[in-house]
Image (cartoon, rainbow, N blue to C red; front, top):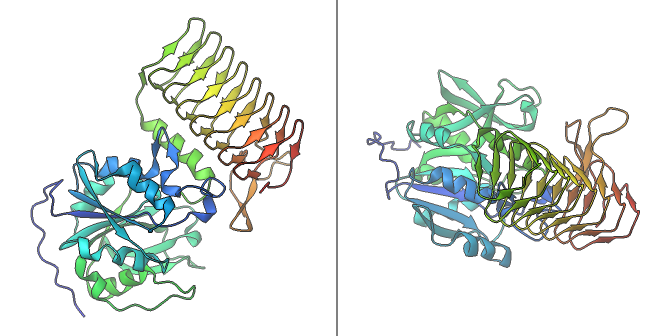
Length: 411
């Protein structure tokens, strides 16, 4: 079967006729405990959810975004937060009734899409420039060079045209990873595909059939940030802050030492003797008490209180969390509405110099990071002097007594 690919019309960014389909139905099990009680796509970096970051990049480039979600309470939160319009992008919703794989999820949007559509993952971060480049090369797939291709779907390329696709190859023939962004004809769903070995319908099986019959242009990404594991939020915070400018809408008292770009929200107060080493994001209505140290690449959500003498280093903190006096929180991810008692410490490296390992979906995985602290779910409370070993996870709504040393995950 050959698909009819009409000659592309002159690109009119933001035209109502172009749909973006955003996959936002997945549970994000590898992101637990952060995704235990909320959709992964709603986890925040620099004050905005992953989903909102992508919608910002699409604003002005597409007319409508179709969010593929599930008909359950967790996805109702996406509807509540995003609504029917985001900036200049109209929002529609398609329901994946049951989890049957990425191909089935994408096909749920079929009644809403027109002649061609842009497809992207709702839990990875893409850049506006890369989206523009993809939209100028119909049909197109976005790829990115990676250091360890055996962990990705790899695209073989000849003369900037995709010629093969292999999922997690044992012997890679390329280092160009599939980013999950495509600009494709609606008729791609005319192909017949079968369930994969893991019992799901894979969208990449549509791609394999497509490139066997049609030319698929390849665009290499300048910035793609896959967010599959908890530590990727730390990496995303760093990447976004490196590109962000500075804007201070809060108040910084005298005798503070500040450097680098600071993004500080309205109503935030940074009290005397505190040192802030940018780039750093601090949201709205936060209080940073005297003699604290906020180190670069940290992202602190709205309504956070950092008590006197605490240190925050390269850490992502959710909204309305309190970090107690003299806490040391480094290379960690902390959820919403947590309360860390005085002197709580997240250890962030192994004494033997090995990279930090952590748990994900019941397996132990190597983060490949020399420094990685704790992952703490929403509404966790720790007593005074709690010490958490590198890579350990604490599930939501747990309370830890004074002086506890956490050497295993706490569920």
